[in-house]
Length: 321
Image (cartoon, rainbow, N blue to C red):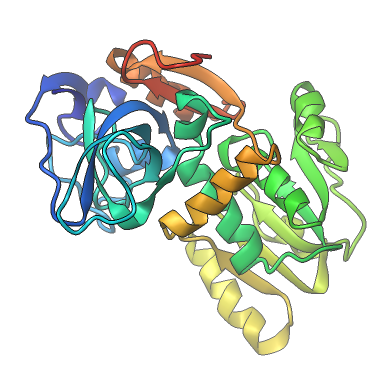
């Protein structure tokens, strides 16, 4: 099968095309013909060496954790899916490899793709959508009537967070540039804060939850914006945040947490249902063919993507953006 591989640690110039055997599904796996994948920062961070002491990579390595596609074979113990099913999934960080024509997927990680989404939109959803859901609902304990500040609201994770926060009944303040404000407001944001025009994100003690998907500012930038029992959730682990998190437990009701994605089909099925209800949609920044995966990774590294970057594996996915 056709695939794109990193040949060693480094920048996207290390990505090269390859012909490799298609994976063989184990008894509890699906073999999926991949229609589309998407790019997330973890894909190139795993392969540039910055995480090598935490999550080492064996080369050559096929990057990619998200997929949408058709089940073509199932293992003997698989009960929830059948060949012909259209599914989406987020593989785990130690089992990536969706930048290829086929991928083996643990049954527990998959869900039926929403009928209301094309392959590009469905492939964009898994990792970013799950991250947003678990950060808001599980770590942030966001409830109806709560106030949340989403930092990086026009990004991959952020634009799903705005929508999921509204599903949970929250009042949403979204931090993004003025250029992205119109479509972020369309996603449901109650207030838009243009970071290019102001450094003030709200009055003191304004928010029950701050979800920081950018993590470019120190926590002190947000500390005073939290209510006395407010929660700050970051998408990136950092030593400074870990130290503060421990200290806060000694003298404050405020909490600092980092979302560590738990890929699972149950949460993904919940997101699929929201999409079919018209309450969740994917915003696509750009679509690249598999042969241009290096350019897609460079686009992600730029930090300027509006929504998700998608990889078209088939070359003509249904409903191409």
